[in-house]
Length: 387
Picture (cartoon, one colour):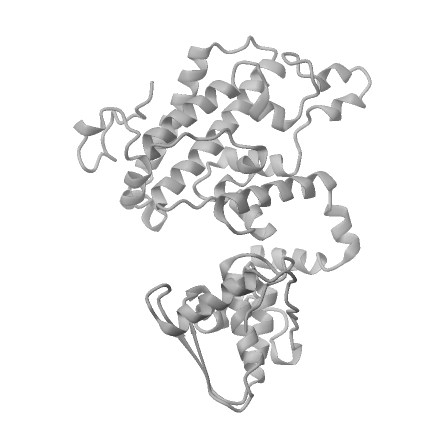
């Protein structure tokens, strides 16, 4: 059986694996033993060892929760035993290779397959267990229940937010090869690789919450604020962050590209607004490279925004190229120093960053790196090596 998963269900590998498991369960006679072999640890764990905890918490925060719940109800309908076995992907397992072939056939279908996501509520626990609740979880569950009401959703469904979210998701799909869930993009704005001040910036950026451009055009006496004083066109966040000719964005993205080339031997293309909003969803081949990308793009974009505000809102003089260079270097070095400080396990315990991750993040981009010790996280004079 080959299936082309409808876009409305999702486009991630986990969605595809879970749909395949659900279809296998539903197409197997209820009284026959079924063995499911899969290379998706997420799907297997979600249907076995994680299931009790997820169900106790009402599947709160679980990605693809509806699909998981539908699969669980299909499992519980069965009378015979169901066995889950994890197999390593692309390791020569005949069944796994055949499944990959069918998956490729499914992607080539011109019309999506009919995949029904139906939950048998009689076979699922309603709500969540009280002893599993915290104030935060209870609030999220209440909001989740409200989101089922059309009137409440309509109040939150701002066109600008929807448009920006689509831009972010499309950018993430271009970078990672799969379209993320909306919830994943929102969650990425709070990613631990993104500094606290930048998290709010990304959140506001997606919500189109900053008052620029057309916002001022309708306010009497403030119409002039709608226009970029340097370029003479209506301001937008895209213009400010990636196109404005005022000193700031061009120099900052040049510096970011220079640092990225030290790390990867590749130029960093000027990011789009969508890529900036979705930067924390990016996945590169190596964990350290992924982390540096998230830091580099998020911090650089935030600095562009701060420099613009100093020039426009605070009516300060345009920053010189040397000042921009130094401000950007300082921003990167602050993140580097913070990373080093957060590796202190004695002080931060389980919240401490792994030294290995910090070393992998900043390798190849440090000043005088050949003269540094193997573990430089406690060295006082470690700096980013550009310029």
